[in-house]
Length: 301
Image (cartoon, rainbow, N blue to C red; front, side, top):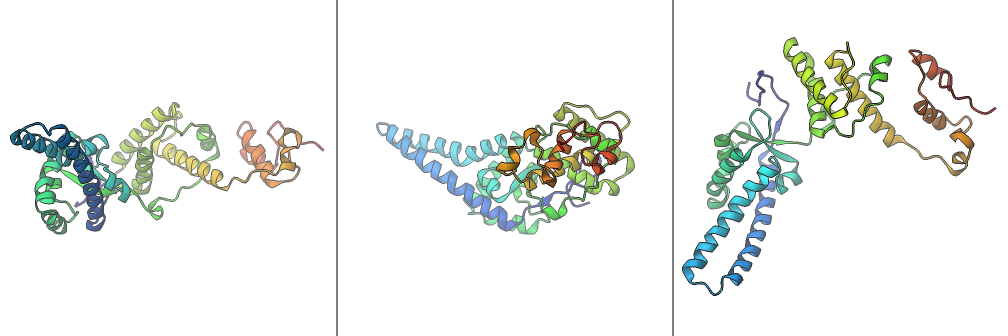
């Protein structure tokens, strides 16, 4: 198993970054870092003009250690592996198990970067990345990290089937605004690979993801609903909301002036009415097929 794995020996769907994209990210970071370093050095030299040469040299060394060396370490730690260059190229530094990097990981990578990037103009880093199967430089090997692509192509997202009507009603009113993109990515990856996993491992992963979704939405998982089915239903609901938002067409002025928001036989108006007044009980099919039937709303004749 050559790819990153979790503690349960489940392969993660992480895509190691290519050398070209990593090189562009490093170049962006170096340009920004050295611009900041030069600005800070100019200010330091102006402020220390009255000091002797030894003091100026000591201050210059301290500034070098703080900006070109300490700066990237601090940025990588605070951003959890996403510097400005990596953000621009859609990359992120993660641990070998897929988790976020800590200060110790950024410290090791930053210390090794002084040798393999700054002192050797990136030659050592390029050679190590070309030799490594996953494009890891020496700093990644010692730190136990990996640079991956964050932007997953749309074609890799699994197809989602519509859930049962009773389950769709359970997740219809969930507030999904607090769910982070990282959790949605984990849910999509699980749904795409659930059938390839061991049954016990898949159930455990689904349970953890469902619990985290419940915490984010503030609504517990419905009793008796399997965690995997719940994840699929919530993911489908989110996709449908995004689709409706993208396809939403504002009503014209004449339609908007009609009392009660009813616009005659305009299909878009009936769809809006069905979403605002959902059918009661389990007769979901009759409510949809009968237009306004079961909604408690009678259109004017």
